[in-house]
Amino acid sequence: MPKKNGFIAISIIYSFFLCFIMLMMGMLANYTHSKLILRKTNEPLIFEQDSHLTAKIMQKYPSRKTVSDFSQGCPTSSDNSCSGLFQTVDDDGDSYYFRGAIDNNYLKLNSSDSNLWRIVRINGDGTIRLILDGDIGKSAFNSTNNMGKYTGYTYDNLISCTKLNPCKSVNIATNNEEHIGTTDHGGTNSTIKKKLEAWYYDNLKSYDQYIEYGTFCNDTSYGSGSETDTLYYGAYQRLYQNTSSVNPQLTCSDPIIQSDNSLRDYGGVYKLKIGLLSADEIVLAGFPPNSSEVTISNYLYYAGSSESFWSLSPSDSHTDYVYVFYGFRTFRYLYNGINVNSSYSVRPVINLKDDVIATGDGTKDNPYVIK
Image (tube, helix red, strand yellow):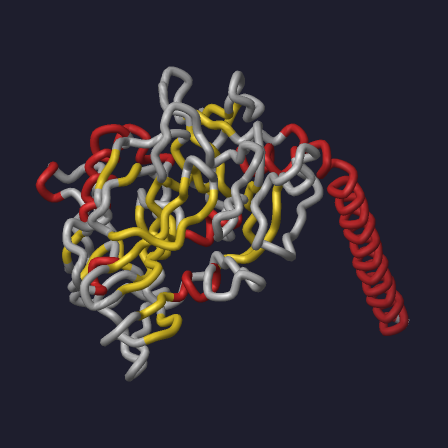
């Protein structure tokens, strides 16, 4: 009899244990299902109320466009149908860029700051790229123009600037003036890099905590031609070589030399706190890569100056002169290069961190303001 009672007791315990497990699994499944429903129900509300700058931008533009023909600028007609937030890819993922006559991408780093910025794009890593709505004066890209290396944002680098090992300017918000812009790859800074990083030191070091090291592309990849005669770089091939097939891109190529597939010791891929727009970014924003004038204002067009502004993209180099692309401000198109020792406007570009909080609605009268 004791054996039977023991068997019954053990059976009861096991039965209770199994019931308990089934009950817990049911409760967990129900909780998970409820949680998923709650998430699906609440996500739009959370998104609408999110004060992160990225969320505010994306909520304002719930549908993103793509462009099939970049040979024409934007806007070209009064209906402004080519303007908006568009989607492409960069080296970090999906990127969302403004194009055309946008009037709600204004930003201030501080409510009392006199400088207005324009939002260029949300980068693939979630950081936010800005360009100054104006300029900081004029500069040559480089003071010397008789060798290809002077198309480089830095040149005579000890180590080539590549995607896997980009050149980085270190501590520009804390170093003293004579060390501004020191790179971890050695080399010589271009004239325009010195100007930009000195301006950062004087004007943006108090905002350094909000500014991320962003990818900047000084694309010295091979396009066509020859090092010993005329060499056309990658951006020229994408944007100018074939006017019926304009193909701007936000991915950056390593600085390959044509003849032996080795790497150049100038230009390439950089991680910086401040830089310039690439020629590709200027085309994506709506400037056509030819002399077809944009007839209605584009957001890269800014009041108060008739000066054209430098890009970061080399166009071509010859045995006695070298060219870099620039934005032709008066007629609002991308010009296929000017001598690097010419003097044009400098428009700083920075990248905000992906978690910045902002107030405002992005209009000129109520710009986004970083909190």
